[in-house]
Amino acid sequence: MPDSPIKIDVAGWVEQARTNPAAHRQRQGVVTILNAIAAKAPLNKKMFLKGGILMGLAYDSPRQTVDIDLTTSLKAENYAGEWIRTQILEVFIEKCRSRDLEPTQTSLGVPEVKERSGAKWETMELEVGEIPDFGGCYTRVSEFYENLPWGRCA
Image 1 (tube, rainbow, N blue to C red):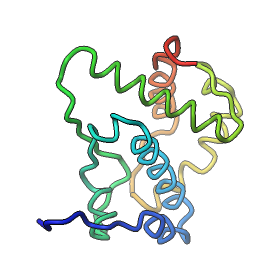
Image 2 (cartoon, rainbow, N blue to C red; image 1 turned 30 degrees about the vertical axis):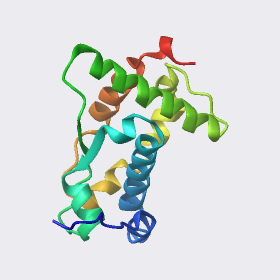
Image 3 (spheres, one colour; image 1 turned 90 degrees about the vertical axis):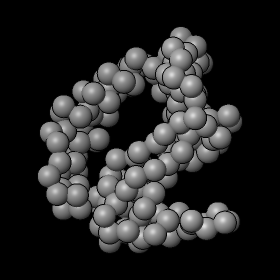
């Protein structure tokens, strides 16, 4: 283990996938999420990347995965999950507004959003192999999104 932090070229990691549209979009999404976590104190000191994506970023591992594995130093108390969800929502709202978008609790229920989200879903299969059904994944993400603590954020 090195004594000093490893410098990681995240933009370069994203750019490496430019010739594969599905992988490129996936990496852009990963970077958006990691930037959101990094921008939100104290979340940026309490959540840590691990797993395949970390190996791909740090060591250019060919075995990187598409899921983002995170761990936290937060104590497993009842409020921790709600606190993390509030932090995620606050950053999400901030990022949307920076792009002149106004998200709502029901945004993922808009048919155009679902259609655009699934338009090239199957192209990920070229990068990662077998992929789950888009409809089931979209339903789970929508349920998570709709159940974020919208009443606490504005």
